[in-house]
Length: 384
Image (cartoon, rainbow, N blue to C red; front, side, top):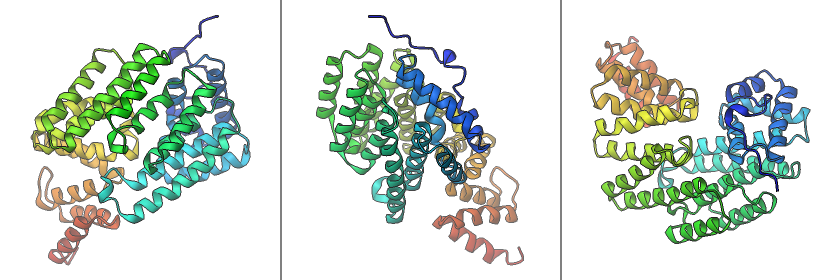
């Protein structure tokens, strides 16, 4: 049997658009060219010329949650109603809008209206993703993103069926197996026993060593998270550092999700322990590994955390740049933080008018501290 040719990133089909090109084509309403290019990428995957990870990477462009893009997705589908890329893309978009509506906080802190909005967008996403399955012989990204929704909604039976459906059409798939391993983590109701059993299942499927390494790292990351929940911060840091070092030894690809997540969690732990100088190397590596964070509005939380650690470490001007970036992306915490900086003249020159402007932006988003600061600031400066 001839070996399957897997192309390097630089060897992707010439018609495969890069992320910025994809979004530009969508915004320009050049649906014909967009559809053609993405259909060619999917075809290359179907023929065994691309890996499922390369396919996944091509469609990451649709993780952008810009609300203005919804109309473009609707027009794209209206013009190409039986287009697999169009249905998949809008499904991905709705999924990530749903996640964005929920927010990054623990479930106990998420407001009921946030959960309602999340479910509403998840329903739209599932309609598109389910419709897309009928339009493609190897719809593994449809299964992968439906599984992501099933993870948030706590639907393990559906997730297992999606995995089985994927294996049926693409026995050596990795991205759906990886997504399924995430769904087995303790934070989603699973645990070490379930993850170990699935890892053994993947070994029996004879996945490549690098892929098995990634799945093993997901198990270690889950151990770290469990320790963190038990307030064993040092134990959690040891596990996260083990994950990070494995990636940096290049035993697995640096652009994998586990690497970024381990960096983020280690940075968060150091910040909670008020070890801001120790946190910064982790936050810096997150930015280096994910240049898209510079423009992805859903990543505002990263710049707020990075900026706060910089400020606590005395790197004030760098912190200010991060707060401005996060605030411009719509983070109410960063907007309120800028208001305080201008109000008290910290880092920047004292400017009550500028402070009120930022307090107003935070207050409009329902940020309680911003509302209180706005009220107090206006009371003290009635002429502004």
